[in-house]
Length: 527
Image (cartoon, rainbow, N blue to C red; front, side, top):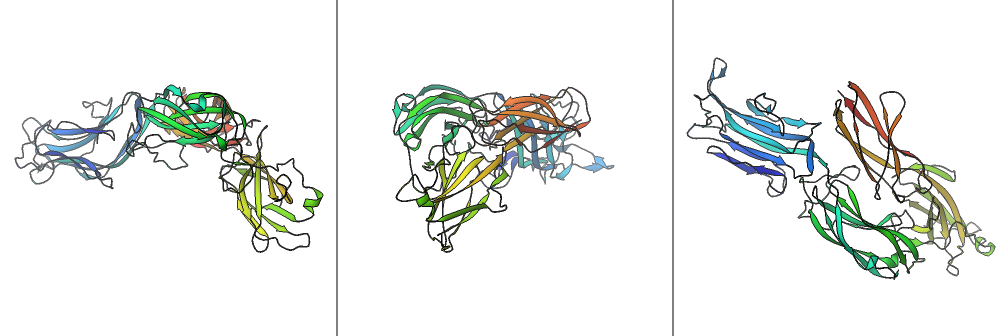
């Protein structure tokens, strides 16, 4: 209750209680129980209500509650109640009692799922237990609860109309000059909706630092699965409204030179604000060595610079010492076209020219992303087995790239002893969510999702498309934010019934290292 959005009202009458079976963090239910009443004197209007409410700046778009409900008992005469009976009902902002458009769950024990969608202007949902009787009657309930409403599960989809704000930005990361160590950026972030969720630092469009500055006693933790396009929390305002943030970047892990720096703040709805957008100059660099980096993009901080990129050629004296092969697991072609998130495998063998295996040797896997100015870096190192064979699984987040496999030369770190090459082309990865999925004329549906990979400056352009059974029609063009998230909406102008299919298309762009891609398709029905 309370911090999780629920609050209990003031009971009218005696023997009305609230219980919380989830208070210790386990599974269970919570809710209201009316009775037993040893005096059997409940009258019309006795009861209590518990309310789920959201703070200003938030609105409830839809909800679903799983209830364990009980209404009654009453004395039966001529197949009807001779007196009053206990009732359970659920309603929300804007529903009126006189027309009985609240959800009266009726008599007896039930386990209903109560839901509503396409809501507008709704800020609260009520669950009530009460006595429904004529003035001359009472509700008994001496031997059993007169009414009981327990919530055993549920979810609320909220619309957050606020965006984060940032003030007091400072720190050595922004002080100018050449950076050569651990540097910080400090600021105060605020958000009046779901609160301040996370802060991140991007260098050349790639995240190098990302953290949740305050988990708010465990409430500000995203409970949604990794594949979800929306975040999920256990409270309507799960994260702090204001938070002082300090992020530290180890600039020695960033290649020397000038870089594009962005500092971002994200709220619990996924909306972002830019705390800083500018350039920094870095003096440090990293070369050589083994790594188990999660990979692409190669220019992200923490990756190792590959000193023998695709332009480096093996000398005759080096190439006559060994032979290195590399091939895709499922095709013998040198170029493979794949989807984002698929972890492709590469196998190969390292042999002497006489055909003897070279065992226990390191094979550096170097990646050059497919955009202008991309750096070549080592994304993983393999090791040969007793037969000279080796294999690697590429990172899930790898982009379209030229891949160079190198058997290093300890005497010359710029010219490997033997090399092999492959090319990977990856379709852009886009996730799409739409809510609500059932709507009507004059109503809006809301699109949200994320484009994976290093986002170009200014965001990635996307095209929204719809189909009612024929060809796909473009109806809007939008851009992502710096982290790849996007939001849009559409209002239906003509009446149904019609079923539509929606998708998001990412066109090819030279500064985005992916082929064109298409999101998952979401069906929406207009009544």
